[in-house]
Image (cartoon, rainbow, N blue to C red; front, side):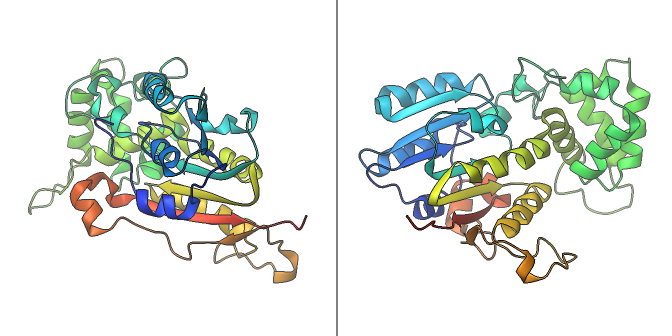
Length: 310
């Protein structure tokens, strides 16, 4: 579909192995790229697609017209996947983060390439917009967004700049906000300019906070695993180190492995519910990166649910 290039398509299809009669849950329908490839992979494959972005509904209609009753779309955040009909599934896919459509549609406020209202909501029908968050969030919430989610090294200066700008109108325009944050976060040491705009990390952190992206992921992972059939595969693609950490810990837990270096539990206290299919995360090939530079930060991890004897 125009404007959308699904990432890591080859490993997704290799891991999920669409075959006649199999059913899949695409928790992040987005532009429908992964869903379309699964449906085209074999006759009789069925896919249920989820998305909380109302703009995805129109793109879902295009897929419905092509594949008919083999495709079903549900307008919901993926944390509500346990309420979706069709379980259990042979495979579940989660492609986390903001979609190309959301980034490219300047009016949504995810990017500062063009001036727009600071909205940033994946579902603009509810919740606080980015502007409302910046105007009303506590200092602690701003620190979490900028320092923890955005991983901005100069977070103190950025937080103080945001607090000082409240009520001035600068927090409601992507251009003005980027200028404000960029000035606070720029490296004042002499040398070549930074590779990325100094407001990039903070914009990312604000977006993650506005949409509760890490909370959504943490709530959805156990539900995604629970709706898998015996022997089913869960594939998760993340684009942020904090997302990948949550996925890695959950996958280690269900595979009976230490969740991290501080996990001192003995092996006999752990329960193996799944097989780890990716010892290290899979990343895009050089060929894919040439075609789709946005795949550069994508990391794919997968597990197969343990088969239960009949």
